[in-house]
Length: 370
Ligand code: B12
Ligand code: SF4
Ligand code: SF4
Image (tube, rainbow, N blue to C red; front, side, top):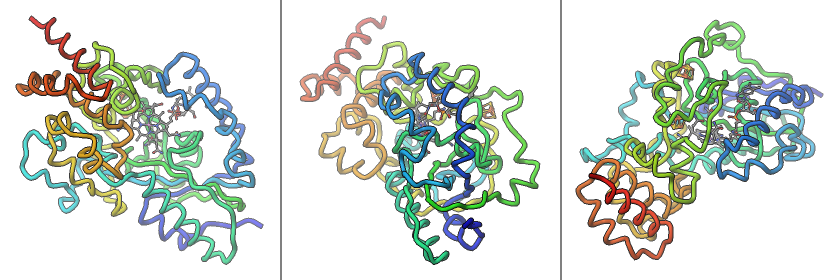
């Protein structure tokens, strides 16, 4: 029995983004080039210390290892920010006029301005599946995926026709840009492939990067290589979020522009200028008010208990307390903060080894300065 997803089953989708589906049987062979590309990327060490990416490679091409009875993947794009020229004043966060706040200085990536997206999107995917079961009057098994299992999220997004992969490696949907998360529901029902009318008929969906190279030229660390590849060892998103140790001294000056994550290769992308006026889930709007008022000095001098109070329940906990303090010290060094010397002195005997090591590294860099 095949089911066709009708618009009425997409009610929730209108609130959370766009959706397309793909039959998994036919899809496997389309992932052959991707697995070759991915393995080559790993073998060249471009995943840096993200060893979790080396595990469960089989599940990337065989989703039945994630949900044994899986037949269809429903892929959702869930936006967290509009294009630069689409303004929603009521959604704009309040930085309470603090000129040197993390928000005003754009030191925090847009995707962590809200509650932790993993939890928010998992909840919505489950809700979607439950609503669909009610609408169809049947029950089926499903598994929500949001940045949590070995799965080619961008390749699935591309193959269901929701967008194209840009030179910055982001999945881009013309009219929506790239400031969205990708969420997937594996289900054990046969759905006829669901293609939105506008994708079939609208010439905007035949667009891609063309001759543009803005992201490659704007990346401060030259982390974007040819052939849509990121070298994570150089990427500020990796260095500020995933890297658990000291950062190589040659990259510290780039912490001038960031404290957590990096949006530069998306901010310069023409597809993120003018977008549609789509809805953003209320839980993904700017709900993490804390980051809008804090300064880098506040972060560097925070205790772990204070850090938990400000950042608990947000995706910013991924960097952990020590990592965030490290990033703040690098930022203060890169921007010649007048408070740095005192802060370093106060932290030199910190009980956190990464903090102590960062203090020593920054001190030694300061001594080398003329
Ligand atoms: C590891 C990871 C990272 C790493 C590595 C990034 C990278 N580009 O590979 C780091 C920490 C650097 C990172 C950073 C970011 N990430 Co990240 N990340 C992931 C994760 C967990 C795995 C990605 C991965 O496997 N990379 C390895 C490369 C080789 O695979 P890939 O980029 O997916 O490319 C595939 C295809 O595009 C294809 N392909 C690409 N190029 C080519 C070329 C050829 C010739 C061929 C044949 C195939 C091919 O092959 C690959 C396999 O299918 C995914 C979630 C997931 N499970 O997919 C999120 C994910 C990619 N990240 C996401 C986000 C939001 C970010 C940041 C924007 C966060 C931030 N603001 O700091 C940045 C963006 C930096 C950037 N330009 O990529 C979103 C992206 C949404 C989107 N619109 O695309 C994802 C999908 C999470 C989610 N569910 O929403 N991330
Ligand atoms: S996220 Fe920043 S550092 Fe990483 S590739 Fe994009 S611009 Fe470069
Ligand atoms: S900035 Fe240009 S090259 Fe880079 S992803 Fe966007 S359109 Fe493609």
